[in-house]
Length: 367
Image (cartoon, rainbow, N blue to C red; front, side, top):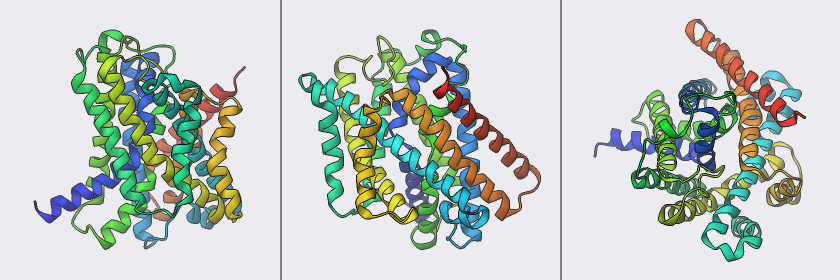
């Protein structure tokens, strides 16, 4: 294989690994409730917005010679208030992501070992957080393996589905829940954390690839996997459940639950480490406090009543991740001096992310 092809595939793997995650398990139910046409349109339009934002972020890194970290740039360009908002958005999104994985992991354990249903969350929490006491090693490799597990889940469920195109008769075209897909799909697509490693990889390791093509290919590969999973669940499940797995039965349910559990265990530590680092490095809090929030923060949210997987991913994606992308685009507008079509697209993306965040807040706090 030519080095240019190897570099391209390796770099695309970085993008896919940062994008694939627990959000995939919310998508079939979202498509059911919003309508399959609305679901696919959201998937297409938000993936285009994500690719555009990632390209802007990469261009910022090139102009800033790699020092364009989101938090640092936000503080430099907009001041301490915006920096606090950025930390809150990133930290809130990460903790909610852990909370969603905790709820989902417990459900997978219950499916695999029904007799342990009363202890499923405690078992998953212990298995996922225990490795935090050891020094982090090869975190990117762990993330790639976790993403590979999710990819295997998506492909297996599609190819095992007896009726893979049942969605077109099993779900409405559109429904009154037209805004429902925004948060969960944005949560599933968010992968801006790949841009910095991609920049470093191009500078130090994988030189022979086009960042534009890699960002497009890596994201679209994930989108196709998501579409395959949605089609596969509809074509297999007797009923489409919130977590996608409960409605399955027999071998497909066991396979999805097992591979899903392994992938969650592979990525949970990575997110927890990011939570701890955000608190200790960016907020300048003690190490013990960062460790405490990373380990117990998701548990406290579950006990506070935030235990619905769809609500969690909707809030995380629609509010916190949307805010992160708002900051990415606002920073790029100020640094890159966008003009022409890029300026129009940037303003359109800002409007989409802002309106989506407002809707999710309204939906969450409505009476």
